[in-house]
Length: 119
Image (cartoon, rainbow, N blue to C red; front, side, top):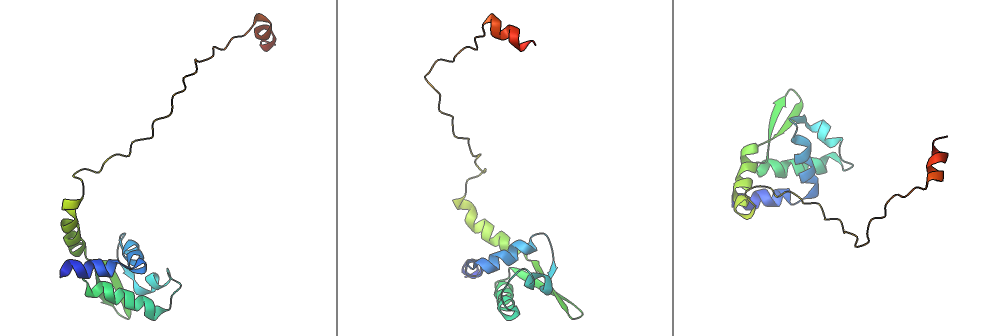
């Protein structure tokens, strides 16, 4: 049941954005609220869903609540997904350029053109 809770919590775009905000480290709730145009209760609900799924944890410092990612929970999801993913990330190969069948034209200069370019 754990994978379903994690997947459901990450199924919402706003919650994924919150997780991305937290990937660089712990943030206070106010900093998270500032990144959205939604009302604070809406963001609080998203944070609550993430917390209930074990994706984020909280730390209280006075009146401030700080949120951080629970990497162990995301590791559970990564382990579940690993059989479906390639061992090594494949390099994206560039698209080969179409070769022209036309012969290359040589840069032919007559002596007058060469003479003019020297002045």
